[in-house]
Length: 402
Image: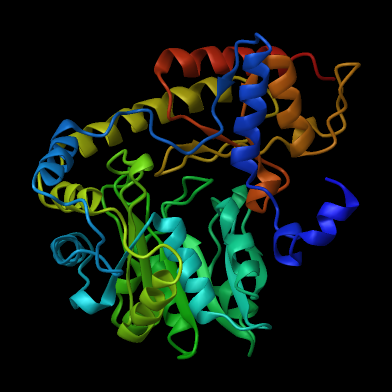
């Protein structure tokens, strides 16, 4: 980028970091165009197709004329389905005007950041965190405050840590459970303890990203917004990308206090307006129809998790937790820092991931993008055969480091 171009661009865009997951995916694609057989385990995208009955619902909606502009906060049909889902799955009651449908959960979080933050407002982000949280907060002119938990804590921040981090500038607390990138799941007791802390500060709000709700191996998903003490201080974010394998449909939603939902609808109205009509009708069908395909996908992910953990455990130097949700492994690879194969020196997780890409032709994402410089994220949203081959390559590559 030339100096002249940098001057012409806004400060907002020049200071924004590129998404690390997208960047790694592009690097993998470049190697493929050069003729290399690259295994990409970098993107958080289910490898399953959208279930047929959901696609059929979209086709039916198209045939019925759902091809026009939609209300900014979403079609009534979908918001009613979301209302039913919140009550059924999360024990949370929302009026329709508390629900806003967006073009993906990412837009929902951006709407919240732009609607709630002023310069100087602090947002406590529980780390490791999804890559876009940090930049979305900065876009809203908030100040990210990263609160970290390492592998010895199963990557879960405690209520005591949270209480210590709150200041008079704290406006929001942002986290995901099940977590991207770690797969960790906060328990009922852990969330209840966090709710107890936040309930003492009525001007602080929680953004709970629950996009991986249906990929949860514990048997029970707990929403922090279901606790009475913080139900009026919680915005629950969810969507269709992960649990229904609808990544390309771009469909997310929030359940929030009415005044926050109204603000998000106002913000969205000036950017994208409402999400696609036939997609929303398919989403409504997804929530209210047979969930068997979703449960089958979860079972497949659990099987793959166990496969990957067993394989990585055999590699000396890898330190692993046992993730209870999502479809990621987040190994600690600090044991390799300072090592070399004679050509490549591993100083940090960024170096380690570039080494795997260039030597093993396996694309993963450095933990530095997720707020933990000692780890990397591996997505096991791939076939058993692909995962076995990736582990074989990773093992061979790291064996060359000394």
